[in-house]
Length: 566
Image (cartoon, rainbow, N blue to C red):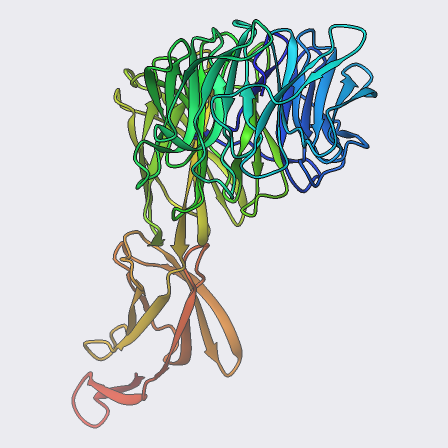
């Protein structure tokens, strides 16, 4: 977690709001520390006491390899010139030196049996390390490799005895300044007590210290790029009855209060960009419902620039953030709910102002138009003029691009669509990124319920002998009104078989009628249905009795003409 010109190693970042980035698995089972080597285009990840090597990737998380034979690799730090990666090996009691060009181990510096070196940082021309194998006896040491013979100094004076190996931070902007903090562990959840030391003389001299009541349950520490402030990620700030919801900043000159950075419950990690433009804070809430983890990118004054919500089931780790030296990439390490299976998330747009989309739509609807409403908003500013948003719909038939929608001047918008397939219809609204704001996309799913249909048929005899007999009917839908004409299939069945008749078109309310063409047949009316309406069929059998009708045409017995009518 060293912040420098060659590398910016950042503590674990908390939850954020744009898309959280797809995790890239690291192929290891646990996590300890993260270092970004921008000069060589590499990311180093150690796996802690139970690991056996250091995982190496490119700046996108690809091209993975392992530096082997590094049992218990924990804290890491680049040398000021970037040529060497120092790795603390807890169980072996040594600090290994790795050539950052060849990725080979060049030397091991023995710290001593039973020392358990854990955390590293360069300061004052030396490599400082927090060590200690016994709970309640954390200690500070240094390794000087400037001469031909490395010099190890143990038991350097501290005003307070940390309960575990202290976490260390430094900055090239103030190379003689060393921050020492008692990192929280499962055995010491209320640890904290960060202090600032001057190491210019080779012996730490306290500059300022905070009480454990100010920050307890400390998870991470970062210095701003100018080393003017130290920012703490603490489970509790002063009040131990409720979890902290923001990171606290303090001036390194005297540790006086110097600002707060909202981050969400249970602050987890913090870092600052090398150019001083951003402070990145993160929190992981494993107690909430739902559990959540996010990363917030803020200006030094605390205003929000970007927020990343990490994928469900992934949780930001302590000391799990790093920013590349050129500020082009933000790297986060997450683990699963059990704190295992570490993965990398690489964000390349964190320096842009973030945007967010809120969408609202019914969870389910019968066949008919779906209305999706929402609002576009910008972090660090307001939407002041209409914006064009892209819309797509995904259903069982695939994904289809829908017409763009333009927001109102305040970012509000609404769109209407007629689904063509039942069940899940997912609407995605997106705004492409530009030179000022990052891209943003949100989705909402509407369940389109298939609509049942039914047909009623009634035979209407002619009102007068010799008149036309009719069959009338009504097409209706369950839970939905018929509002447009529909085409129905018509078949007449008699002793000779089935005969297709011209289709029947309903009126706008579903009513229809057709004449009886044969008075001794069965008529079948069918609604074939469509993608969101179920088909139905109904039949009626017509049986009219033929009667003899006589008409007078003259006088006498022959004055009648006879004919049969139905």
